[in-house]
Image (cartoon, rainbow over all chains, first blue to last red; front, side):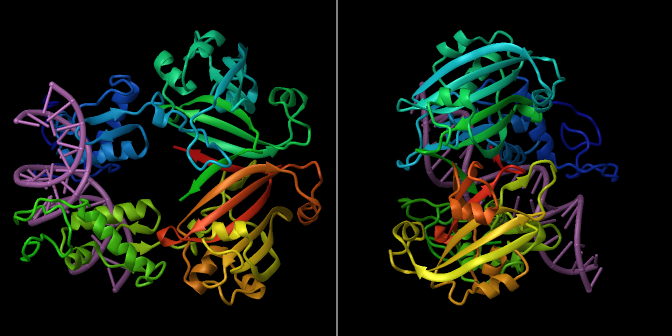
Length: 268
Length: 268
DNA sequence: CAGTGGTCTAGACCACTGG
DNA sequence: CAGTGGTCTAGACCACTGC
């Protein structure tokens, strides 16, 4: 649909580089490429929930028409979104909103893989929720989640096992607002990755994450939950996960047993 | 411009998708996009040393002419090479062969950063070579470097210190052939990152790497070199670094002290 | 100023998917 | 078969660099 018919503008957007054959002011205030502006618009539609995870977004042609730009420009915008894993292109079918709910992308953020088998893991065999309670954010949790100390947060503790052996002990904190109504029962009954549940039940899609890794020795409680000894060093993995707009939505502190697994990383 | 006048071929390359207006056989044997073929050609020139690190490669226009292809196609090829950090684009100047010798990309593969300061590290304050000797590849080293057990390898051991505190203990193995002539003196006298030395002195450019991370406790010798106690767990980081063509050229086993530093990783 | 990479367009055709 | 993303082209103009 025609977005507008404003003069001095060669597309439906403002503040472009003023290319094309329409004459206009040449000041170029804080130049931003057209495709970046289109990307921002698509991003808005994504985070507003206008297009749901795993559904197709409009075709490149349609978006080009809607934004009154060429298909190539829309294409470049979508290229970047695809590179950031926000969207998945499928030739002949369309472009789809990325999701954590599919087999292939289910444990996208989990880098722990079994030592021997060089194939990708298929996810933990067992996920046991130890605890799930409402609390108040401590100073460090608040800082990580961009909250204020004392704000309501949900805290979850769980143990992941591979082939019957407890391997990962995780504590995670979620902002109370967006995750109102999350309970241990709901976590237990859900049959899939946690981030998939966040998507479908709470409309929160994790887009990227940062991890800080250290080596630590477990305390008595941690040893008990992981059924390991005092002399077994563990990987401490502190993850902050973000939704759209770099908004932190989860703090996760994991302890990984690395006698039969290792944390895999690719450096480019 | 007319791409060419050759029969059944719309560019200087063979086996294209046969686009354009030249009629040709429609069998399409193992279709590969033109830009991928151009990318492969540029890659060849890079690994053959035709264009040296930190020098400019020919302009897009010139490459387009050379390969008898449009600039857009060359552009897409270079885009991918830039995304893989093999090449760096600089608007108004040209496209340059990437290098480890510059400040910005010097410690590209080092993920250990200081705990407090959120700024990027500036590299280790001190690099001390403990040992540098020729040996024979053990089975695991041979496997990692695609050699045969018993082949000549160079083994280096060193300690990196930050602000006077030993923090990283590294053992690394290099294939004897490409690194003939590497000595402790040469390593010591070189004032920069090791990968920069590999580039300038041995023509070996590390392009990507994989790391396997575990938590371990140090043995007596390691404790001595890192001046730490028996109860201090360390990050064990085993890195395999590759040149062009996914050829492994270095195996590196690092022990990282993570009381004041952490291993930072970004998940996308 | 010329030369480089960066953006944008318009149109053609190819490869793939599904009805 | 129509519709989608994927490739390729030709040409225009913009932003940036250095002489």
